[in-house]
Image (cartoon, rainbow, N blue to C red; front, side):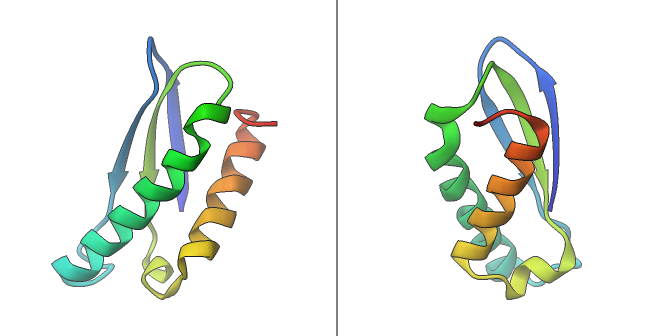
Amino acid sequence: MVLNFVPAHSNKVGVSVSKKIGKSVVRNLVKRRIYEQFATYMPRLNGKHNYVVVARERISEASFDEIGSTLDFLLHKAGHID
């Protein structure tokens, strides 16, 4: 996954999943998993930003917990959570 962000007045999240990931059922499953994991981090975010999460090809094989740990790593790296 890739995490892009810009400062904003409120926190918003968008998810981009390419057709390279799989058919619509797989892409929607990936989107739901990312949105759900991101929702758990929303109360802990430092500051207000608009986020875009770009899914990469191997994400279709990732479990729910692996997506969460990757998202945790990306948010820590960006300095948006402690």
